[in-house]
Image (tube, rainbow, N blue to C red; front, side, top):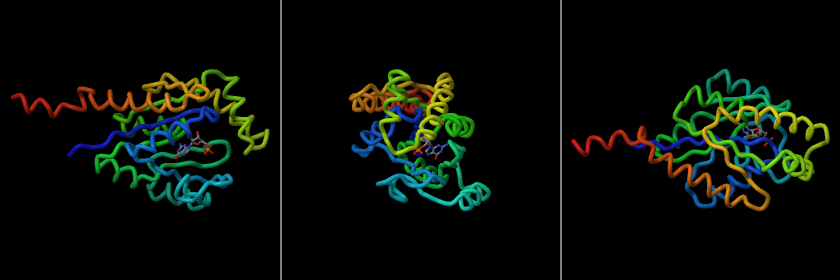
Length: 200
Ligand code: 5GP
């Protein structure tokens, strides 16, 4: 049975990856894996849509039960990918997007080597900082912690398969770049080994 592709998309806070992913989801080409987190919802965020907002106790119980494909602590909160939804979608042949930070992405690389790792970046650090402090949803302290996390995350660039730049006002272009990656990945020889049978 043909299986879907797993796209792991990371990007430091302020790269605008949420907007890029929103474009990708508008066309129904991808299945978005909703993560679990212990972080409090931001205004407008909905349980089951943006995240499953759960207690630390429930999160840790989920890890112990083996329900998380990966998980990581990020700026004081736990974030993780519920395993069954992703496995079911892939088995149904859907192309799945995980929007997760770098520690989680590297866990996925270990467990599922065929996953495609994409790092979204802002054009430069000044743009990143301007976007992050302009969001206005976090305190100065949290913004500073997210900036230092961003610097650390960019150092892991070499671990990714692709880098996509999300320039100001060009999020549609970044989404298109990811569609191009998806098209090329479908044509990778190792994903098409079954075609040999047809020519024997
Ligand atoms: P935010 O609090 O801004 O929504 O997310 C903070 C960071 O957590 C982002 O880098 C986001 O990609 C990451 N994140 C969201 N869901 C998951 C997840 O399921 N696993 C991991 N490892 N990181 C996640």
